[in-house]
Image (cartoon, rainbow over all chains, first blue to last red; front, side, top):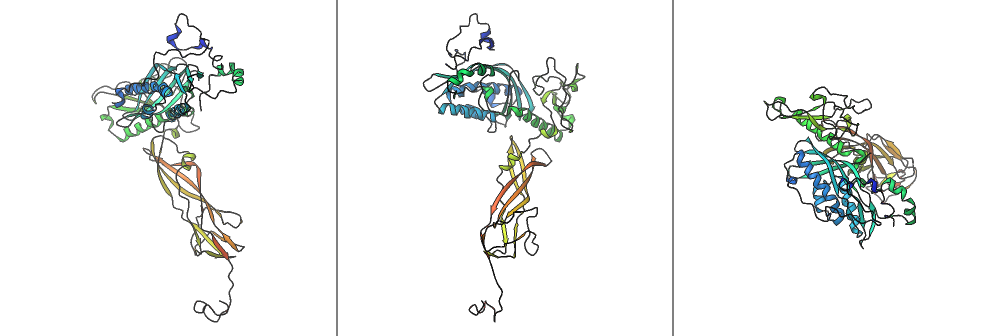
Length: 184
Length: 303
């Protein structure tokens, strides 16, 4: 009931893939739109994870990281996320905690696929530190309870990210993420 | 902080939220994650790392042997609306590549300190080859922002060992109305920690001592750690018989040095530790004339 009344911002839908749909059928109750990406399927670890450290490699790792985001909320499987997250990364830890709490309560989240519109890797300190600018949209989010009922939804959001990645000589890690909601 | 759903949606749903008794479940989108976004921490990390790269360059290969080179310079104002000037995607050219077509991106106001320009990097394929144009590497900022800063909160979580208290005379009892001497060891303590992934040396120095003599008397605050007899400078005369324990609160100031930086910086703020010495008796002793040394004849009158 709560969510049904809140999801009428159809005109704000920023998803470019649906913007040209001829007749979007307004759903009376929130139903997860079938994503092109099944968020319960673990994203494949890219070979760029093993280096060499380059700005382009950093961008591939950042894309992988953002692909893991909906996966950890959908499944509660944090292994790959934690493996690519630096211990000091506040954003990464927030996601781990949030997903763990949600799954401990028997809930899960679907949707939230991150569509990357533009990304650009920058070599800041060769062999050591890289940044990746990302302009992206995260799709609508659905939180399910233990009976699989949708208990909450979140709207799709546009944002820019600045992701800082470190290379320690053998592996990449995400050192921190700055998020700027679009228009802020 | 969890995601707050879009402001528009919340406003339009306010009545329904109330009637639903409050929504406990919240979806977790990227923009709702706790992060140091407000601090622009990746921007800061980039500034640190860029500064480190620049320092490494200046300490490394000779200029004529370099295949890449960092330099600070003003950014040309990118076309289009002025946006996030710290983001690489919007900073594409620098006056290091030649005069800008338009204005340059203004620098931070560093409250009197000279602002630091953004960092640019150019490469060449061989020492005989031409340099490629400079490309953006890292933001500038203010001088103090180019290395991580150890906050008072960071300082306070260090395991500073509380000061040890020495009481003189040290025999389990002291005399009423006579000076009791207290002192502590003012040794610095050194720590090795990390800050945003950087190794940091920290030195904690005791700067102020507040003595509570445990008898209700006003606390005594000193900058001296006290000295042993006969050079004592922190003393207290107990006025009542009984038992007391001395408690010392030590205020520590800190300084730190980030790896890659030659300078020590002061921590803004202090830490405190508290220690309590073993309790002792406050006793009265009266002098009497006795015939012989009491140690030789403890049974004689007056001993």
